[in-house]
Every structure is written in structure tokens, then in C-alpha cells.
Length: 168
Image (cartoon, rainbow, N blue to C red; front, side, top):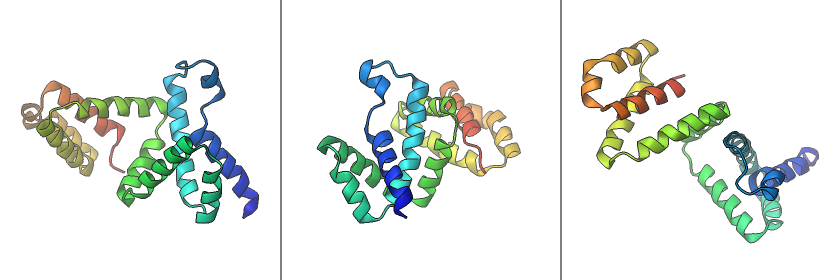
């Protein structure tokens, strides 16, 4: 067991905690794709790190500077507090190519910028769309009721998110 544990530990530290070498030399010069790719790596590593024995996790965390340790512990706690459904959604997101992850982030930011009541309605509709078959979803997106219920920006968010995250 220890044969794979040490490389995993150093990989977790390197990917989850340390900034990339390129970022150390040119602050702010990391592309969006590089950031998205690092985020995808982190998520898988956080999951693996969370599965390490408690004692091994403690030893790894003790080696980190206090600020980085706190950040890793918070990420780990956040991941462990996710419901199984949320973990599945997170994994689906992480399996998207970096450019699709970026598109999803943009859409979620737009959705979060909506007024509270509209955001609630958009989230409900997105949940409904995800429960529909592809044919039902397409019919709903083209319906007069849908057009009357949501403005152009909300329809765009719903249409694009339902395409990015179709039901499995």
C-alpha cells in the first residue's frame, strides 16, 4: 500500500496546494484552460486524498505551511460534506473538457446574477429539464409556455446548461 501512497501524497501537495512554476514567474499569466485543467486534476486528487487513512492525511497536512494546510482542509471538508448526488454532479462537471467547464462556469455566474426569485425559478426549471427525455426537453424549450415564463437571458442559460448537462 505504501508504494503508491507516497507518490499520491506528493502529487496532492503539488497539484492541490502549490502554484505551478509558470505562475510563480509570471503572476496572472496563467490561461483559463490551464486553470480549468488544474481544477480538474484537483478534484480527482481531493477525492483520493479524502480516502487516505486519517493518520496518513494528518502527516501530509502537517508538512504544509499553515495557510495552505487550512485551504486543503477546507476543500476536503467541503468535498466530504457533499451529498452523493452532489458528488456525482461534481464528478460529471470535472469530466467535461476544460472549455465546456469554462462555459458552464460562465452560465452559472449568469444564473447567480439573477434576482433571487428568478434564480429560484430558473433552478427549478433546470431540474425539471434534467428529468426529461431529450425529446421532451427539446419540446419544452421550444414551447410558448417556456418562452412566456422566461426572458431571453434566462432561456439562453437554461438551454445551454441543459445541453452541457443532459440527463444520463
